[in-house]
Picture 1 (cartoon, rainbow, N blue to C red):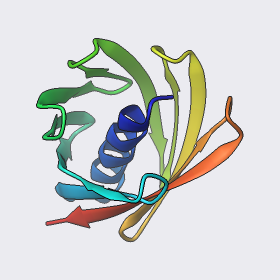
Picture 2 (picture 1 turned 60 degrees about the horizontal axis):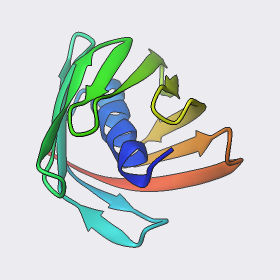
Picture 3 (picture 1 turned 90 degrees about the vertical axis):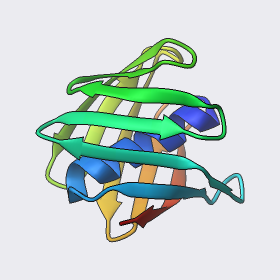
Length: 119
């Protein structure tokens, strides 16, 4: 799973679970702030990746990264998200807590942490 896809999934997951708008994402693995914004309402996500200048979003369970045309299948159950990145052909699981998203990429066997700036 690409680093930018992980960040988009984290932003979408946070917006869906918390109901708050995402104003930025800090990628702990990459050690940098990302200009990603997202908001969600009734299972619909719209977002913008300012670093790549592309939009992402859609209605659950299918989200799309317009920049690379990748589809992401994602479901939400409480504070847990699960899904499949069709571009990388891999599953992921995530946990959303106050200001943080932990994302586990099954094919890599690695947890990734994202700090979320919300408004």
